Image 1 (cartoon, rainbow, N blue to C red):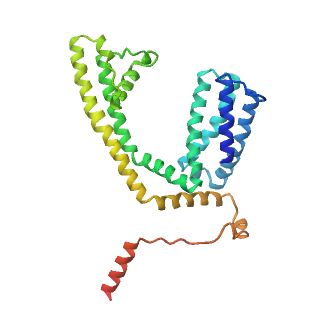
Image 2 (tube, rainbow, N blue to C red):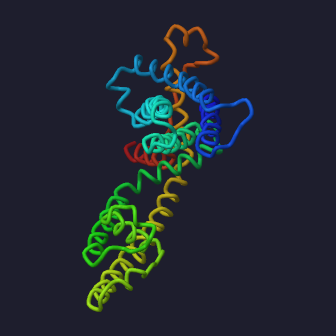
Image 3 (cartoon, rainbow, N blue to C red):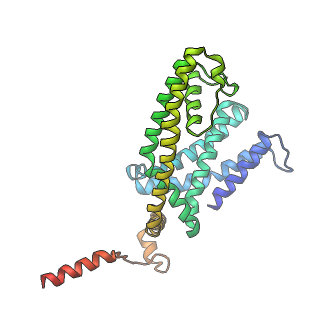
Amino acid sequence: MAVHLLYIVTLTFYIKVAYLGEEIEGLRAGALLIGIALCLLYPLLYDGKQFVRQGPRSYLRSIWNYVDLLHILGGYANIGTQLYLGPAHIVSQSLVVLLLFLMLFKLFFFLRIYRRMSVITTMIIQTIFDLKVFLVFYSLLVLFFGAMVNVIGENPQPEYRKLNRYVAGVLSCLRITLQDFDFTILGFLDEDEARLYWVVWLAIFYLGCLIFSNFIIAEVLSTYENVKKDIGSLIYKERAMMVKEVEEFYSEEVMANRPETFPLYVVVRELESESINIEQSTHEID
């Protein structure tokens, strides 16, 4: 986590120097790129050792490992594009944006180390996983309504002028579902098209805004309550996974010689209601 925080600080300084044109005494863009490369050495060695010990099949079975691979490979690719294409190139800009997203994701992952932070990060991750099916339906709804809007006419708003026309229609529908209303397009439609647009707009408003948006809030609250009930067991599960990951880097001989660090233990968990039912059934049999 310390190395990751250092990586975040180094990349932040590079953004200030290369993209915002600010001067930092003693720090140049080339030196900061070297610092970024050095910060990526530790995760490269860490995941390389993990890949060797677990094997390709076991390593690639975890979605977190794909995030790690993108983080490492994307980091070194970013250094190459910054040097050969320049910071202003769209490929370089896209890579930096992707890296910042992955770095945020990994920061959430590292925050699980702290028990108080683990509550929030576990809830966020669990809620996203529980809502993935609903989000697919919501995306399909927006895509189809976007097609309807594109049939009526192109959105004339200036913020859409450099986007694909179909994408502009989809984004305008997404804004309607989020209660961000804009009726500029009505000034560019004839009378019949305007009437048809209002029919489509009402459909988007009722289905997307009143039903789906409120439904997703209700689902998030429901998922939050369910996760909150089991948050203790989920935190222990996350911490157990982290312990298992650490133990995979040591041989059995090393762990046997360090019982204070790697104790042998068995955890048995039993629900109280189940134990009561077992005792009642035992008395009935007797």
